[in-house]
Length: 464
Ligand SMILES: Cc1ncc(COP(=O)(O)O)c(C=O)c1O
Ligand SMILES: N[C@@H](CCOP(=O)(O)O)C(=O)O
Image 1 (tube, rainbow, N blue to C red):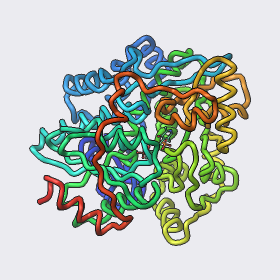
Image 2: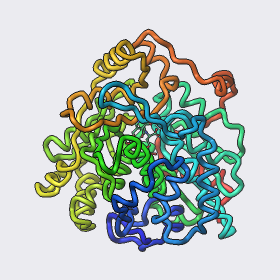
Image 3: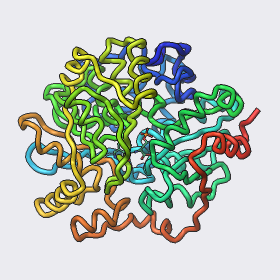
Image 4: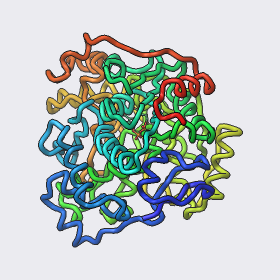
């Protein structure tokens, strides 16, 4: 399996190099040169597999033979042994035809753990084989950071630097990043919003001299392995609901477009998915884009679903690449428009192609709170605010096909918003009991690329 950049001007890479590269050197994102495909018979044969076995089956075609089967199997099993539910990602019925796919049973209570626990092990393996070290930088609006720090803490071959927007993440999210005692962990509070943090990370990748000097690698969903690992739970949930003999739809709380792009990938691999529904909060750039074809950034609005407070939705570039018939020149045109004028207009045929697979809707903060309240009173299920956006948006979808709502975070990560909406204050699981009293350690930095690069250079052990 080979991987190509959405912008077509970076080297074509194999799996291990793609995992270590993060962002392509031309600023694009890596995607598989072609989609692996499973027949209905092959998918049917996946029924009843335990989650790690399913992950091995679904993901092996992406490895291109670069990681020996017994090694990959061990990494997958170790990754999912960190989850506290035997099904790893259980499916819970909300009511007739609606199901929540609970993705928050990992160490940091958000769906990011599903991919991050595997990615850290994959990177460690590749670095050990090569006898190398790497510097990892990541941007977070709250959940990626904690998941990455948990997965990489104490790993000898990596130093990890996580940029989070100062004062804009929930207290639980902040402490998951700032209470690590591991020497290789650096939590950096940036004076800006998530888009600033993500822009700084991309800026570091696009400074090739810096990138090479510190052996830079990334763990955001710009890294293909993040998307890859998230494909598995689309298969597990569809199989539980009768797939491949019964199509299902998914509604996905969306920010950086990574999670829902994994659903698109599952569909390309042969899984019968009817609709992929994008749910946004007030930061509704994707809902607006699907409505009128114009991708136009506005200022980020702070909401009660802070992890989705994003305007520049990185993985949308992967969808544009697909919708354009894999035309990197077209993607470059769009990305130039975004850089120069903060906007671009999607060509009509491409927009039709996107609309043939995706719907989109928005939940305001009031609608999100009302959904938390009504879902609790209807059946006793307590939603987190991100999952609630999906439940609200899915309510506007035509019925008939089972709807899987991606439960992307545990409500206890956002106790204030959940309590304000429902009157119920969700408690952290007992095994996270010490989190809120542990000592914090983080550095506040301005949103300045040069200062960030200096900080990383001075603190990484991977600099040459
Ligand atoms: C809880 C939660 N829900 C939804 C999202 C959106 O996911 P994506 O960025 O993959 O679209 C995020 C962050 O990305 C998140 O942390
Ligand atoms: N919501 C995310 C934002 C970063 O997304 P990623 O999936 O690209 O890592 C977060 O919680 O940090």
